[in-house]
Length: 258
Image 1 (cartoon, rainbow, N blue to C red):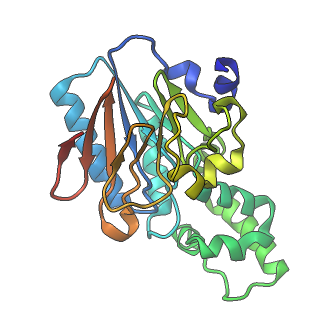
Image 2: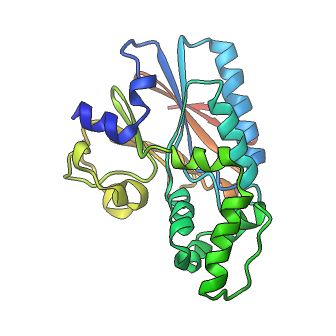
C-alpha cells in the first residue's frame, strides 16, 4: 500500500518523517479569501515560533479558489509560501474544476455554479451571462494567458492526498469499505454523506475539508476542518502532534484543544 500511496500523493517521499517529533498543521477550505489565509498563516507561524516543533509540516486541504474575491492572491500566497516551508497543498474539487475547464470549456456553466465566476474575475475576466461555445473556448485561452505560469504550474502540481503515519490527508474524504490504496479520485475530491455518516475505522484518521460545519469535528476516525470560511469568516487549522489535537482559528478564538 505504501508504494501506491507514494505515487498517489506525489510529495509524501519528500516530507514524511518517521520520528515522533513531527507536528502537522492542516488547514481547511479557503475559497478565495486572502485575508483569512494571511491570518491563519500568521497564527501558524506564531505557534511554530512559540513551541518550536522539531519538524513542522503544513498541509492545505484544497479549495483555495472560487466564491471569495481573492482567488488569484490566494494561489500566489500559497505558491510563494510553499517555496520556503515544508508544506503540502492538496487538490480540491474546485481546483479540479478549473483545470478541467482549461481543457473542456463547455463545463463553464457547472464551474460557475461552484463560484468559478469569482475566480475568473480575480484574473481580470468577466464572461457574458450565457456564453456560446466560441466564447467559452476563448475564455479558457484567455485564462491561461492571464494566469502567471507559476500559478498554473502550482495547480497542476497538486496531489490528491498526503499520508503521515496515523493520518490520511485528503480534500473530501474516502469511500467506506474501500482500502486506501483503492480509492477513486472522484471520491477523494467529492464524497460527502457515505463518508460523513460512517463510523468505520478507515485504517488511518482521515483529515479533510469539503463539507462545511459550524465547528471543526474531531472524531475518532476523521477530522473535518472546513468551517465555511467564505461564509463565516472562520478559517480553521488543526495542529496534530501524535494523538494530540489543537485548533487554531481566525477571528477571536485563537486556539482550542481537543
